[in-house]
Length: 226
Image (cartoon, rainbow, N blue to C red; front, side, top):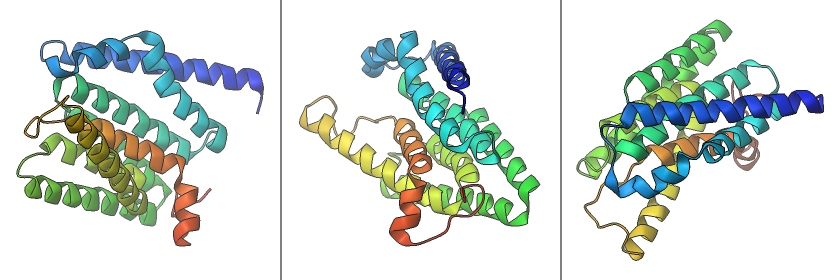
């Protein structure tokens, strides 16, 4: 692939990341969380948000090129990044984001055929059920927005990657929560935004799905059967 074109795409993703951060800032400016004000100041710096978004997206584009898998990947990346930021900034995940993200991904899957569409539906349902169970077990420690976000993400990822992403998200979220408690930066009853961990799990799942195939000796369905 031409180097100049790759540089152009990186810059495109870089400025897209900046735009998404500014959008998240505007959407939450009346409901900022004081607990995350320091992190918000860091993320609101243009080069920080730009690089966070551009690095994985550039990797995905280099690996997948112009394809249906990349189209779904970039849709998920945009929705997850925006939701992670709004949750960090205000504790809210706006319903329209997972609805649009999941709806468009299911539409793309429907174009590809019945099997990809069903995989998206099962991914969304399984993800939402697992998140609902976690919410019940934690006695409300998980917000309804997280459940909806997992539904939208699952529609794009499909069943296998949805389960993989939840595992990564819960693992990293638990580790960070434990670290914050040890450092006394948070108390046991203080809610911690979970969307960033769901987003991280989704991005890592997409980036490393080939590892999942090799480890479990499975063949992932469309669009991840590269």
